[in-house]
Length: 112
Picture 1 (cartoon, rainbow, N blue to C red):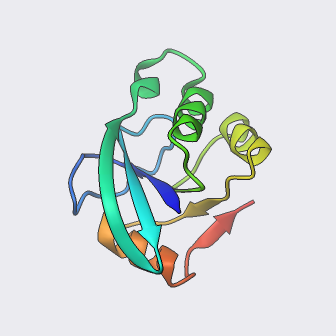
Picture 2 (picture 1 turned 135 degrees about the vertical axis):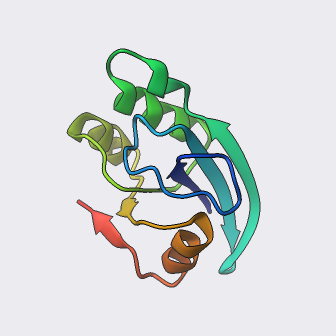
């Protein structure tokens, strides 16, 4: 499974950026059998757009093949794009390792 996490900085212990469409980076994390595999940091180019950043960010993570998103919050248009592709969105806070551990343990709240 590939998960996108919105981050403030491209670091292994980076902190969550609570704004999905305007986050600086995404960590693209591969999870298999409850273990964290490869992590790729991708700059969120949509954050530099004047408008529709959330929709553009959603499309970019979909193109990367993600199956779930972890963020603080996202707008209704971005949520609709992810919903169309059956990609669940979870809310979290803290560092990347903490969020991933909570995700693997099934402790993150899903955003409806």
